[in-house]
Length: 204
Image (cartoon, rainbow, N blue to C red; front, side, top):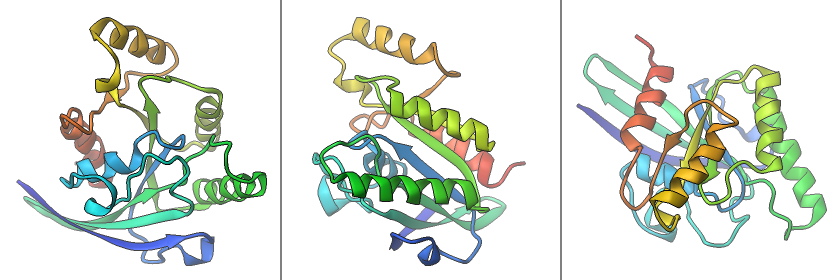
């Protein structure tokens, strides 16, 4: 059995305000409004809309405008330790000023390229949209940097029927290894995603 204690630590707009305690980090990446915050809340067993969860969720794209760090304290049989969930600003949203988009891009790239404590990136895709050019660009960049990543497909329950779901997932699978499927409504995928995180944080 595992128990978790989670707390918001800091919202950082500059690298010099990132946590300095050298704990391992799991980063959540994806386009604006793809469901990163809902995924974080579900993984922590926190449900709800808006500020009812630890991570802020909203139907307004671009809400996360800095890098948010959440410290997770875990107790597992034979193991106790802490690490961070790191929620990065969503990319690909056109309704913010161009200068702001440049700032976000620079902040994200600085974090991903230089953060020594980063252990795993979770690339979050919307099942209804699949791979889009900004996702492909990020994937190629992560591969070039040698950053390990997993693809998480959210909002599978919003596809109209099983046939549409199969077509959407088939298109996603053509461009990546088998993704992990997640639903904020049913909790689908939470166990599998935690297994991947656990293996990364404390490999046996």
